[in-house]
Image (cartoon, rainbow, N blue to C red; front, side, top):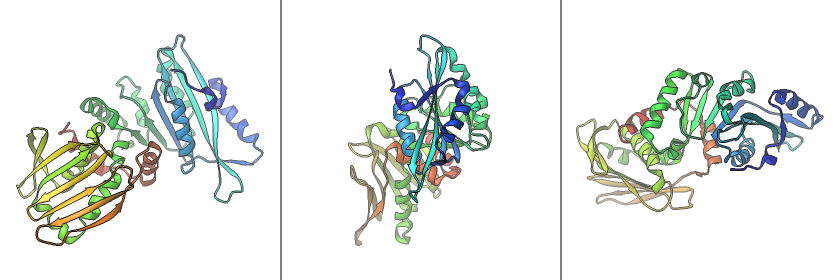
Length: 349
């Protein structure tokens, strides 16, 4: 599929990138300030997403100073070769006196040049800065394993994976090859960030907290294309509450609590947001957290048996890719809680 190369900036030979970037800043006469705190690399198989990725980078660099690099492969190209472009995304500083700019390098590997991916990547990094790699495609076991040893944060989106068990198995292999350096950043996990915060805040109240050992049913309502998001959220609940998977029950699951009681977990599909609602039922209380389509708030309802019902609003978040990236890189962290939830989720796939 064709892409609009005019959005990518100045075309040039691969070996001219460093020299032309230097000339780009010298030509500004000090009116533009170069800003870079990380290397932010976006890899996509195919060239279809180059236009979209360029627009995302333009928005992303308003709040995250980086050297951005878009890498794409086009194995169907008639001739093997490498094409490159440079560009700059500039935004007014808070004082409004000057423009702060971030570089963008775009490289397309045509035909059999795909094997040059690792060397092209390392040759064009801004040295000594952390490497954040956003992998926008399925995992490929043929990728040079040396790449993973250089990555500080690996971003990906498991919602788009067709075979979760296979993809996560390849990812785990890559993580072991990278050692302890590489942090996994699943945007599918980030989608549930505000819901997880809402659930935690709802159960902060002592009366609601006391119901946790008595929970007998837990359900999650999700959009048709978001079962994996719901699985990660349900796995987080199970991991945090130390429930252990006992068995499958039709389309649901039975977990066993630390006290030996059973909890039935159900995932249900419905029109609406990625995760539209979750509900906890005990013998004494029902807790429901719900998000209406288009709303940026969660409504938490607590309905004790024989007691006074109460509800409150909790902040939600936006689910567009730019907002997910912003949430992911703003909050940071090593995502140890994600790894705990993932260990449970892998038993549910």
